[in-house]
Image 1 (cartoon, rainbow, N blue to C red):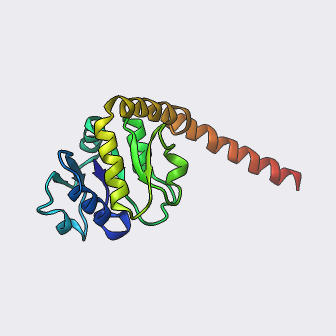
Image 2 (cartoon, rainbow, N blue to C red):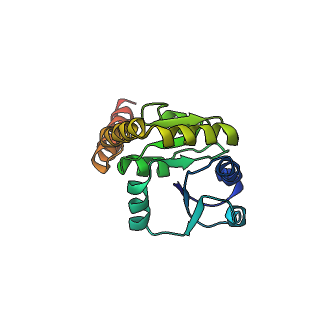
Length: 171
C-alpha cells in the first residue's frame, strides 16, 4: 500500500518502476497528485484515489506493508507512524528521518532511496515471507504504543514545558 501525495519527491516513479519489475504483487495506491498518470496501465497497481482517514486505516490494516519510497528528506514520517498504529510494517527509503523510524528487519524494511530494483527486491521478499512481515507488524504496533500514542506525546510535551520553565527560573 502507498498512501500519500502522488508527486516526484514522494518517489512515485520509483514505486512505478518497482511495480513493473514485480509479478503477482498487488500494489494499492491511495492519493492524488500531479504524477497520477504514471500509475495508469501498470500491471498490478490499483489506484484508490483520495481516501478519508477511516478508509486509509482500513487499507493499512489490510496491507502486508506500507511502501514509503520518498526521495527527499522527510522531517517526520507521519504515514509510517499511522501504519505502525495499524500494526503494519513499512518498506521505506533509507533517507532522512525514515531509517530512524523504520528499524530494518524489525518494524519494516529499508531500501536505497531512488533505487527501484532494491524496492522491488524488498517487496518481493515481503511477499514471500508473510510470517516475518506479520512479526514486523507486531513490532511496529509495540513501537507505536511505546513512543507515539497521544498519551506518550502529551507526557513528552509536559516534560519539555517543565524543562523550559526550570531553565527560565534558573537564569
